[in-house]
View (tube, rainbow, N blue to C red):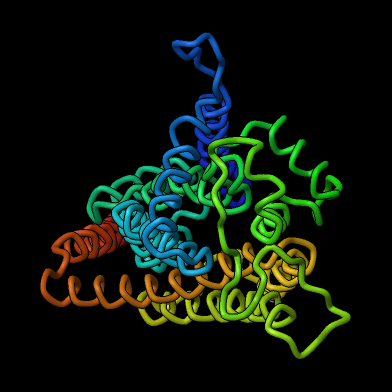
Length: 344
């Protein structure tokens, strides 16, 4: 009975998160009418277009698409750092009080109503909200997805070419639609055949997609090993796996417990998916994933030491308070037990 009620409580929280996520998706999937009468998607208008403008400015200064991707995702991580700090703190707080929640669960396993009351008191005493780790993380998702669009579609969001102009360029260069004719691949072909397509639109610029001797517009081929292009998906998968290991290790050092819901299948599945995508999409996206994994790892290390130092300099008074609540409850139960024995 108790486990059923607890499952319902968790399910209700998941439903709240799902409802918030759905509301956010509905808002971002809506459209607004511009002054010229055209309708533009809110997600593209508020997130993708500004990110595309930033990436274009970085390229204008750096002149290398590979380094532009690295600097771009680094700036994005810095921009989202306040939300990451808040989300990390919420998750660490929830992990920190897990032993106390488990103690309450054992104590009131036959009294669900009392358990809910004491759990609410514990959250209040510790200054913890069950949703505090989820909401900031949820808010970062649209931005992380928005990063992907300008990187994978430079013709649309960096050069501001229309769909008709891109189709005309494909026809001139003899490129077919599909993954291997993606915008990164088309952009590199435009660089190599600039004289043929420069008059299609005044927005066209000659962007160089060569990075460390590697064509970022090309799709890695697993049949051609021992090349940098081949290694990009492999490095992407390895950094993804190491990031998961690092995150789990740092959380264990901070809270003494591993993240809930982690299993060996997911730990290996995500890196393998990363490798698979790396061999089906242009190498520029693989460089983005590698840079993002490394930056995320550095961020995890920074947040770990940030919270450890904060814990040492500003010990939380609420911990003692919540411990006092548990002790008070123990004393109260003990007094009731002694009184019961005297009466008999």
